[in-house]
Length: 136
Image (cartoon, rainbow, N blue to C red; front, side, top):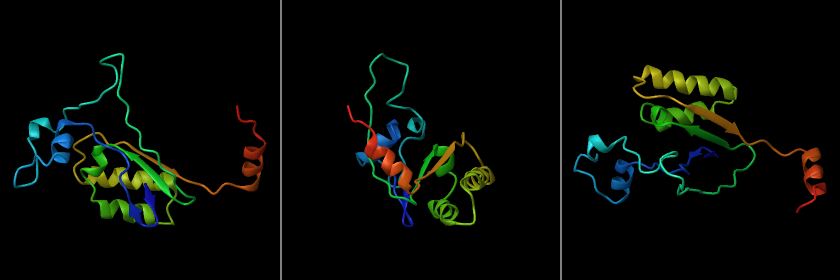
């Protein structure tokens, strides 16, 4: 979530490395076992039952929601991501292109997935329509 100049991670990585990090299990250099880096602890398709992870948020008009893979955040510094998201001269599409281009320039050693959603101000028609909708 990018709100008022702050980039806030609202998701959680489900890998052995991330779980080790959250438990403080890192070496003095700050990393965990590199062999565990991409071993996932939660995935779809291996069993019928899946433990889901939800973290409800309430973005305001003007906030941006960046959904991306580690192919972006592992290669592009957070300050560079913020600079792109802050640029009012760029469309959402151009911001996505700029972020993917930056990750590729930095090595692009992983898949790079970027989706950017901008929270729009609700117009009067939408407010009226929402009030008139029957709740069941």
